[in-house]
Length: 147
Image (spheres, rainbow, N blue to C red):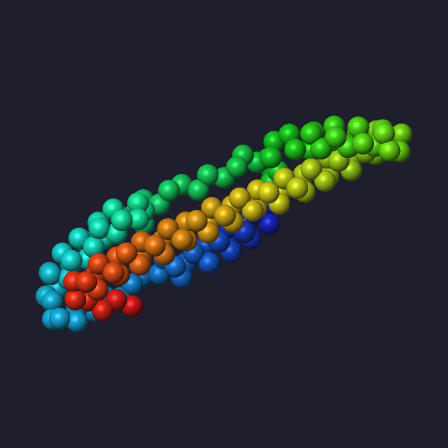
């Protein structure tokens, strides 16, 4: 895993942590601990039904296939081929064009992979926030204060 990829994963985890933080539930109408436990379980299930998201079973984050350098397989080869064509046409030097094309394509591939990971993390954070909001609404409706 490259340093940039590792940094991106750490950043996503740090951003997602506050969203998935525990909610505090206070029995505002004197509900017994057993009643609170039952209500919390029922509201958890209701929130899963409403949002389609279960925090106990989050969807796997599908990472795009990458090489050891964090690029999509074949990105450098495709970039080299395009660069060779351009280099031959523009400067009559296919070799230099291939080198530049390969480097540019790998850089673009890394940026695209990082963006895809960031979008997946943001989507997961949004699902967690929606779940927490639904669970909180259910518990509030049952006479609890939720923070």
